Image (cartoon, rainbow, N blue to C red):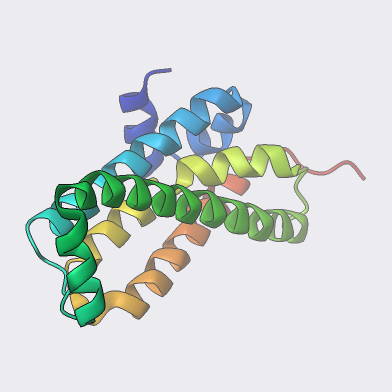
Length: 167
C-alpha cells in the first residue's frame, strides 16, 4: 500500500485503519517519519524567517548565536528533527497504551504492537490539526487537548473493527 493511500484512508475509513495493524512495522515507521519531516520543515522554516523570539529572550543566547553564526541553522534543524521524532513517537506510544485500555473495555482482542501501528496511522488528522493550530498562539494548550481527543476518537472507531476477544 502506498503512502498516499494510507494518508487518504486515515481520514475517513476506520475499517482500513483497523486493518493497518497488519502492515509491516517498517512501513508504519516510515509513514510516521514523513510527518516528523513535515513538522521539522515547518518548524525550521518558521525559525529561519524569524517567527520565534528565541534570541530576544536572553542577551547571552543572542551573543552565542552571533558567535556561532551560520552554524545555528544546521544545529537548529537537527535539534528540531530530534524533538519532533521524540514528540511523535512518545505520543503514538501513549495513545497506543490508551488504545489497549479502551480495546479491553470494548472486549476486543488487542495487542500493543497492533494498537501501536493503528495509533501511528491514526495520528494523521490530529498531527495535521496540531500543526495547523500551532500557527494560532491562543490554541497552544487547548489545541493539544483537542487533537488528543480526536486521536482517541479515531482509535475508538478503528478498535470497533478489531476482532472480538475470545471468551
